[in-house]
Image 1: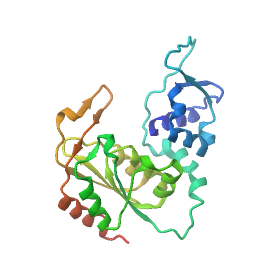
Image 2: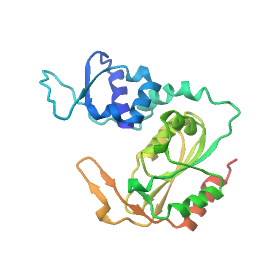
Image 3: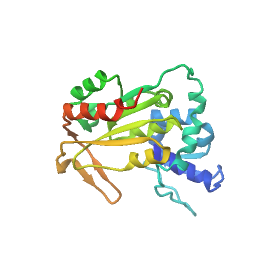
Length: 241
């Protein structure tokens, strides 16, 4: 979704008229979180959408294809973060900051082999366990706008950090030893958040998919609970309230 939003923001920055058709797959209409974004951010999504069925082809005289923009650049995400203020403003000012641990549904096939052990350590240190895929977009915005500390395996759920805005945040991102990506390191750099990474055991090479544009992970790996707890204490507990 962050890549898609980046392209929409680029259209706004270039002054592309909103009546120009944007062709997207018909199945996009069935994606719940996409519909939720349409409702929450109408100014950004109010364009001339054409939903293309899989068996339909169009004859087009002139077409512009939007390549992937720098999806975690602060400028590109500003509209997304600022647009969420209508939701965030509803949060009572007295609400305390949250400490979130992002878990993953085992069905996804990505994450930690010993997630239960790691979650137990996180709970011990006052973290709340959440699965963004099980929350509405509005609830994700509310949770992450209050998230002072966040821990989780590398994944798309981390893009919710932008809803913290200009308030302080620390992210501890977990990777297998042989799969490290700088996506959310750069997001944290752009937003002034603190960042550290923690490496678990390497994952089998057969679980890594290499394409022309990216290396993708599809598998689970082990993380030492003792190493995880030492990192939590050293990174979050010092100079933190």
